[in-house]
View (cartoon, rainbow, N blue to C red):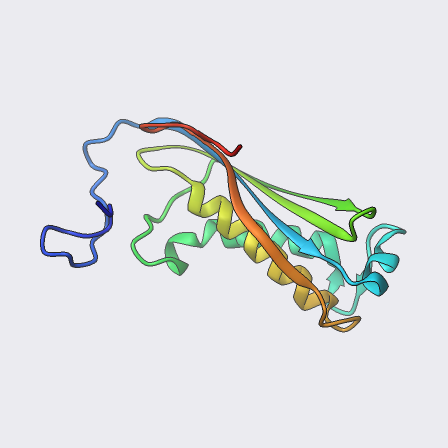
Amino acid sequence: MFSHLDAQNRPAMVNVGAKPVTKRTAHAVAIVSLPHELAALLRDGEIATKKGPIFQTASLAGVMGAKKTGELIPLCHPLALDDCQIEIIPNFARNEIAIHCRVEIHAKTGVEMEALTGATVAALTFYDMAKAVTHGIEIKHVRLLEKTGGKRDYHAP
C-alpha cells in the first residue's frame, strides 16, 4: 500500500527508472497567523531586521529548502528543479500571511514534497526573523494545493 516500503516492509526509495520524463508541477501553501503587534508592523510592507529584509529572506530560504528536499526527507529523490517561486501574500483582515511555493520540473517523479518543504522553510524563516517581536506566531495549514503530471493530478477542494 505504501510506496516507500519493499516486499519485506522495509523502507525503500521508489524505483522511478522505468517511468517517463514528464512536466510536473506542485503548489503548496503555509498559512502563518500573526499576533496583532506583528501584523501592525507589516502593514507598511517589508520589515528590515538585523538578519535582513524579512519577506525577501524568507523567500530565499524557501527556494533553498525546496532545492534541498532530497537531503532533508528520507527516501525523496534528489531533484534538479526547473523553477521554484515563493510568493508571500499578506491578509491584514485576518492577521496572517500565506506563503505559496510553486515548483516545476521535467522528471520521472513529482515535486509535491519540494513545494511543501519550500513553503514550510519559508514559514520557519519568517518565524525566526520575527520572533524578536513576538513568539506568538503560529505556522498552520501547510498543505498541497495542486500537483500535475505523473499518474494523476491533484487539485485541493
